[in-house]
Length: 180
Image (cartoon, one colour):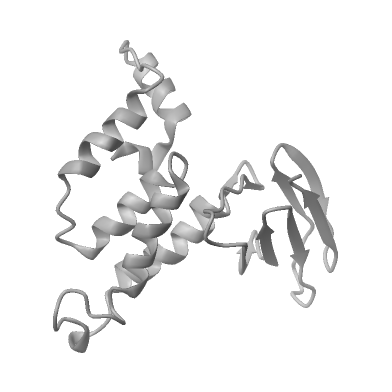
């Protein structure tokens, strides 16, 4: 499940560098192969599959995400919840929203967002700290809003790239990126 870690383009570069071919349908075929064979004996499996499916089949990803999200509340493994919640699964659901559905990653001193919301949700909003700067990120179908919250002494402007458009978000300011 290297797709979960790298994505299709990065895997293509790795395979090419190693001298192997990487057909256009390799990711889709590999995901379908393992999806049919996975027993989901661990609730972490749902998170992994949701992440892998996020860019290929967002709606199927969302189905796996909701199973993982309900795993402790619904005690889907029959009695383990009373022992405590599964922190790996709960942290994985947060990571999935930020990294796969909002498409957020930090690279080269810049915050990148390439949203890919599943059909079941209209939007997400969360707070992050990027390079000591507190931000609120809101992603909807039509736009991404980055609000740089004021109040941190050493906060600095933040470079943000959303769907290929780059801007500097000043301390205390807000930037809106259209996705239409």
